Image (tube, rainbow, N blue to C red):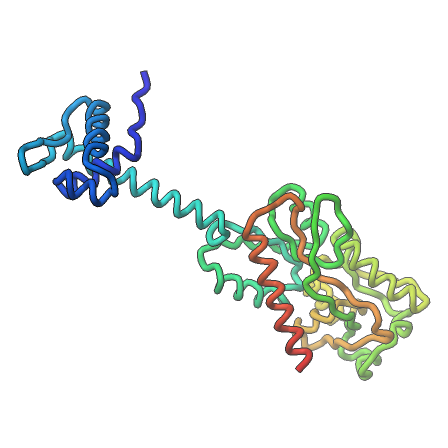
Length: 306
């Protein structure tokens, strides 16, 4: 037969009386009258099967059973208090774990500042950061292996919500010795005869189609000589002379001596970076991350106005 659990109210009354060793003082501390306190102690003694206190005129002392129960009672009450505090912290989004997927190029732009500001506000939240391209991020959101994705040019996906983080123009990525590298701005049409280094469409369909669309608007289809999953690799292959590329402007932070980044003309197309999360995920940590992103965007807009 299972042993009944001891009511926490009785344990609390027992601990207070054990500390005060006076029914009147203990009752005052608990904010109750003496008769209810006496009843709680008797009920607890009935459950234990032995007296917990020696009751003498003007004096109360613990019995052997009481001395044995006191440490366990304190641990139980402390454990409950700690559990309640942890639950409140998690419910308000002050603790817990947040799993973030991000496109590698964002490590050069928004990600470091975002993580720094989030950590300053929520130092007790554990951040799990996963580098992945757009399509794998969408799959990871569906599979619930990440909570938030930071990705480029996401397509509308059922069950996901999106918030724009930033937009940025495209630049031409050229070997530094390329004739067009001497110009301040490169007409896209003048890249028509050059081999291209591009991302595979499967890893970022929206961004890939934007780049191909830029070329189509200039009157040609890019001749792809090499493909690479990461922009760092794309730039390395351009430096090696295997082709040229078109890329989001943030890629300029990749510092390679043999690569030149130039504005393109026309410069009307911009690529979008968005935060993505599941529509039915009400994790307060996601709300906090989005608020941190909004504050960062407001600060950036203020700098632009100045």
